[in-house]
Picture 1 (cartoon, rainbow, N blue to C red):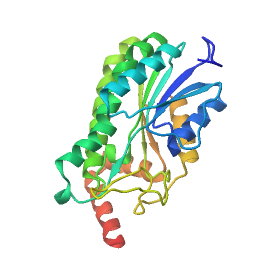
Picture 2: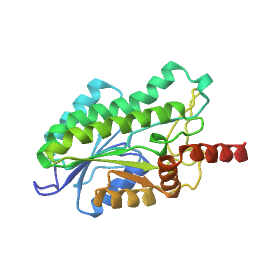
Picture 3: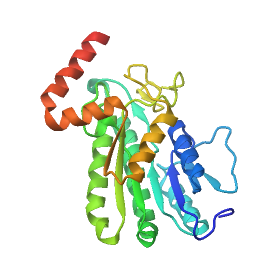
Length: 260
């Protein structure tokens, strides 16, 4: 990779063209990291000496296999892989079709799993880190987000199992759980089945900017936290869900009643 030596730390970020992906990339570049960004599209972004971009549909097995091979071939080493690509889906369970449900899982879960397997050997070699960007919905219920929450619960289960397996190789597995990050305000591009760009919903609480969320994730990453709640809502939900899940549910229902 041009601009990166064998001693320069290298990170790979899926969803690197989105708001949070770009914020994480900027935070890492400021610390001297070289980057490989993967996404379906990159609006107004250009490659730099320390940053390569790879356009790829991660739900296409052939395309992602080619993309991962290109990254592995061009990177002298890989120290960090961030699984940030994702979509949301908003709507009641009664109208959730199997096709929509499966599409959410393809993006949020299966693509991340395939990526983790592809970069396992490189991270073992560097004794590096897998960083999964989950959500509050990965450990707690979220109203009208059944497919999204299901995919994030599955993602957390996968990466927690991966953590247990990779510990013997000196590889870390960390999970960040943001609450509401305003990555696409006013740009939901929602389809008829409720699928929309992440960070575009208008029914969230206490929205954070991508830069603020990235800063908290970076702090948690540096401290080696296995779970990184991101934002005040995430911290409260994480603590309540662990200590009193019934209370967590009642608080969510009261919030829903106030917004209806």
